[in-house]
Image (cartoon, rainbow, N blue to C red; front, side, top):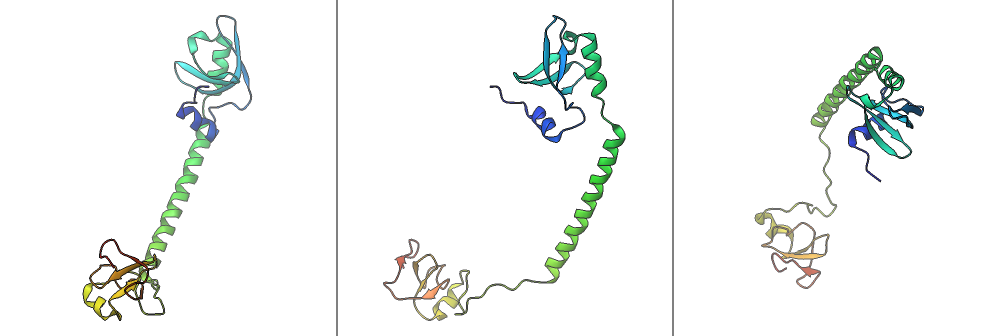
Length: 172
């Protein structure tokens, strides 16, 4: 089965006024008929979704009655569309104001950073504070052992020279 083109899929999902809800019987010039929903129409063709798939039919291949029925029913309601645009613009401006308020609140009230009870930091510290961390090895939350020359030293708790798994960067 052929995949539905993106534009038809979008029109089907949105349920625009271009698509008729009820199946229609469309007559062709050769006498055959297609039963399906008219998804969209352009100046040159109509797109119809039937049980057999999606068809793009040139308007010149449709009977006069079918052509008139399709083209008259595909005109969108301009007033309804303008009203919907105004509603959406109102929602957009409301959301912009809410975002601005939230940004101001985030800048005005700094959040408290998490600090472990043992005084150690969750971020790597510089080498001058590494030596004062209380030992020459530290064990990170991942179970890796770091020595005092490693950039990740001090990011966990103090440990011995044989605790945990040696770090691949510093050798632990």
